[in-house]
Image 1 (cartoon, one colour):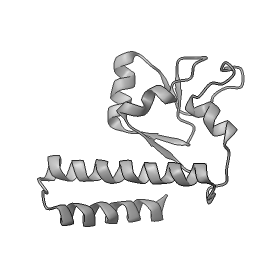
Image 2: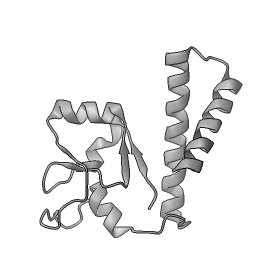
Image 3: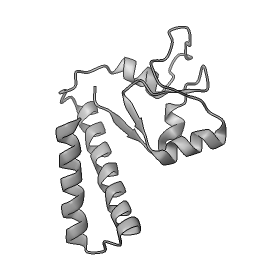
Length: 127
């Protein structure tokens, strides 16, 4: 299963409807901003799978339920996995570019693109 990068704006989808917690079971990576927001809200992050006893209501769309419903192998190329991978890559690229601009003062568009692609390539080769 591919890992999903969860930023501050996407944490609501990760909160289990049954327990009110976020289960970081290896299918998601929480950014520092997401962790800070969860802390501000008083939401617990559980590093591990959601317990079977924490049954979500039918039709739940939390990350844990979605991952169960769509459990593909890591190299899956189905439309859902491909779309998710493309969205994750785009968010990663935008996040890297934003960091380069704000933290390192890089303004040149070509340089931002080149460095962002190199970062994405390095991450992909090492995950």
